[in-house]
Each structure stands twice: as C-alpha cells, then as structure tokens.
Image (cartoon, rainbow, N blue to C red):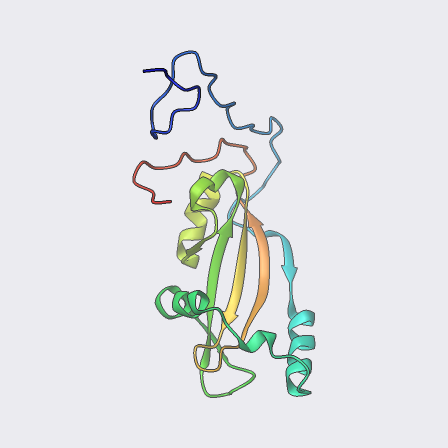
Length: 166
C-alpha cells in the first residue's frame, strides 16, 4: 500500500512529510503596568445613540433582531447591566462578554464571565474583550464597549485540545 504525502487519518504523521511551521510569536514585549487594567478602550455610546434614534424614527431594525445564540448566551452566561432596555423599557439589559485573541487559540470568541478576566489578563499577553448589551424580551442588542487586557508578554497560541469537536 502506497503512503500518501497527506494522511487522511487525523493525528498520524507520514515519515518524510514536513511538519507545519510553529506559530509565530512576536518577539517584542509591550510594557504594561497593570495587566488587569483595560487599555485601548473603545466606547460605542455614540453609535448606540445613533442606532436608537434610527429605531425610534422607524428607519432601523437591525438592532432588534438578536441572533438566537446571542440571546441564549445572555440567558445562561450574561450579567445584569443594571439599566432597563431603551426599546421595550420592561426588561433589564444583560451584558454578554466575549474574548478574542490569537493567543487564546481555539478558545478565542468564547463568552466569559467578567470575574474570569483578571486571571486571563495575567495568563495571556494580549486579547480583546467585547461587551454586548442584550434585551432578552425585544431583541435589542448593541456592542457597548471593547478593550484590551493582558500582561504584554507574547506567548504561543494555545493548542487545540484532542477532544475539541470540529
């Protein structure tokens, strides 16, 4: 039986085949005084106000059609925003926090509790945090804040766990 250069069985390595290049890690560390303190903060308050004006004028409904996964994330993983929904005024908004970054590897794009962020900030060089407000009743949703956390020391991305489904 002839051995192909690219094996179709996951986890096998064909002798003589070149191994993939290791992930590139930046060699320059960024000086960070406090890795738990947000930096490069972007507030989306003006965009939120413009979206609300458009909704009240009847010109925009994109922010009222929350993705079902976002609503589910708000229901099971969200944290109270301590302010009422600007549209339906019946329900308290829920904040959903997502983390994205190359160093997070396959865990990039996951919902995180805000209490977990300080530990992540000391474990990774840099990752971006996005906070989305969601109304579980009417579907209002809007990105409210984004910022960077991390200790500034570059690291290799986390590897893919063996039990991670495709």
